[in-house]
Image (spheres, rainbow, N blue to C red):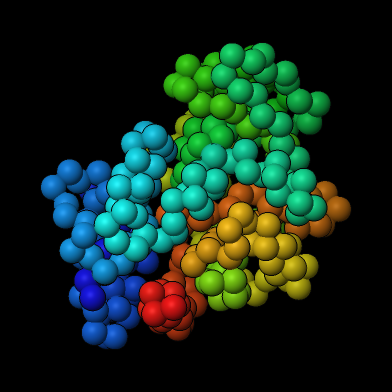
Length: 286
């Protein structure tokens, strides 16, 4: 079976997950290629399975990306599937998680055409509701409301709805926890250091530079991650990354779910790439 680990040209040499995952599939007897989702010359029906891995530019044209995913899913098996992609590529899903009782970072949406209202928080983050790699996300002080409003206007002009969230101070010391879940079962976790420096401009390139290290998540983090996965429409997907931060009371809250093209940090967890590859094959066999 030929396996497609889908990327885009600008990300092909940046995806640290590719080599360990390709080695595992090849060791199991399955050749691997890294086609770009936006390459018009690919015959997708020649692949036995298509796995979204580093298609990190999808946010630039989400309708085109979802149309591509729908076309591919009519020709072969695509993971994660189109309904999961449609639901998870716009962070307004956070409000559905909240309604399901999952703790989230307090969030407010300002749709295009609506007037943005400055939050009361002394420090806050503004980000597009469709985004990846921290692109378009910026951190502001309450004294910088004018600059924040200008950033909102730029995001609206670019066609995005806008999320406003308080900046949680625990991130400066504790960082973020990212928990990897394969087919509903916890695999491993990492810690991300703070990404949004105060006063920094917008992220250039496909993603913000990250400081990553292995982490053993707390039992409370695993519990929140499990509740978040259980709330995903259609049941647990083949792969999910749940990014958590702790609020001012120390409670883990969902910052975002990554269900389309998340880095899964195989190099930080021996055996994780093999676990993932075998989960893929088990899904196909089922």
